[in-house]
Length: 503
Image (cartoon, rainbow, N blue to C red; front, side, top):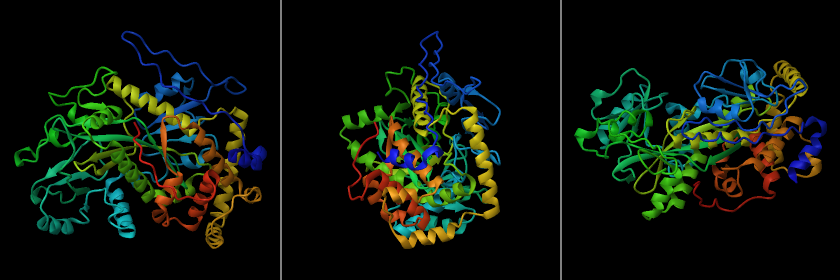
């Protein structure tokens, strides 16, 4: 197949190291601990096992999943995978060798900071049309746009919601009832409040959807088949006396778990009980009451792809400037609200979604998610000699990059723009540099490990469907995207994106 053709051209530059297929830890029964999975690792010449490092965050499930699959924790730099909080330690990206993986891209906050998300969204709405990018409520970044917002507030009726520009877990969020409550100096985002949400049993809810990105250059993105539905704990109401009640208007688990009437799901097989459901339970319920679930999910997946494509160019450029080997991946938590017309609204994107479990449902969904995500990303079993050689090669490449600058990037992109779409023939592969070939090989190899992830982009249909948006790519970025698409699908590509529900 295509993967074999690319690897054949790479020859001994491609190390055919096996990837670990991770399994979630066995769910503990009452009074018992889960048994670790049998390790698939043979270790290096000294018998050592591949290692992982967790820093700048609390992620107990990440530790449990990796340890139960035979990996060991480390505080050194010999890790196979690094799981970090939002701020990666300086120099980490530049120092990684080819077989290491890290859970963030340089510049990922372009999508997750509310002020940056709105800036990119507004830019895309201006260039592609407001009808194309209409899934984020109209917003203003304060204090920069305070006067503009006050003018708009006086002209338009409705409710507005104020959110810190980089907050999480519902902290600092409130509904704006009067301009006197508007922050004057704190940086925040004020958005039109979606006041017609779809309700279940009178309660507002949102969807926590897990999206895995394995590349931004070009985009490769997947949606997980399972996720969480989070409910407010009091009946929804926009009566004036209820606008200050967070238990009616906010769906964040961290807020609602403090409500006196909050019900935690305690039985795994009853995933439609209490104030947190699985996405599967939501889909079953909605189908039962006659909602077009396939249409709803098609709209949600469209929202996710457009959001990712809006930040693809800037994150791709930052990643190329910091890494050499395609080491990065990102597991985003998309928070989506569906209104009574089945229109999805993007509330926010979480850079480091919680990887703790406070219920059996949490434990099952998140541990399965992590095991499948690490399997798809590809944690490779290489011995110490291969890792050491790769680390030395990386240092030499970094030195060469520092001395020469980007390897004639501008000339290369100009040339690619003049040449037009490439043809993928064996002799064309021979002309590609090692880095491009390895990235193509990784992308093709990745297709075999999808498991419970659905590929959002690229697919036959999505490449055609979003062609107008991807015109914003630079010639070099467009060239790499065409290479991958033609290797995967051949001459392209006019099939529509099929409607499908993740669960």
